[in-house]
Length: 291
Image: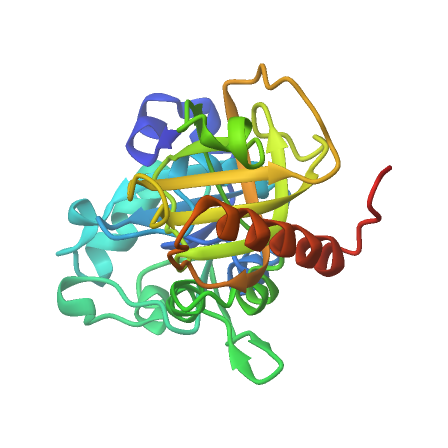
């Protein structure tokens, strides 16, 4: 992760940047991608961070963009007026010639200033990207979060432009699945917004984040294990694959919700439901059963 303020100590890198996209960029969704298309080949991205739940923690954002990403805390720029804000940016980036923002970009105390205020003091070009829609839905992080919290990961993924995923360390689970049900991989969430509790069809990618890594079809559960120890867990069962998991981390990617979380009276009933969940996941993911 690169701090924007650290650029002041790296004059060579700072001088090389000629265009800059400004925003929260907490999801890198289709709307954000539209801004990045306006950057030139020497562009960079500045994420203005807030202490709120985010779709994509900042340590993972560089995997989804081709430009260098820098971060700055909102408190550092919150109270700057239009001139102070522009002076701050150009003091760090002396060769900045283009600033790219979204139609709803606001800055300064009480979000008083608008994109056109940047043009009053910035000598270069200010590009304001229009609102982006997906089938008449305005693409923004708030709507994507709402969809996820309601379990509609399919629609959320459409607005993101990719399957919604979470990542974290692989941890030890109950051990009950391997003994009496189906073996699962248990995940410790690393700061991602979690979708609604329930069972999902999706994919699991083992090991460090890599866009080239294989993603295995899976059934994913997140929520309190109401039928056993009542503890919260995030776990996934790989479909048709038996592997000895040696990796230390994994990514879980959600395609479609299968059902809500619920309590079963006994393990046999739970086992029967899991068989159904697995069949549904095969159908949703269009994966053929092996054997």
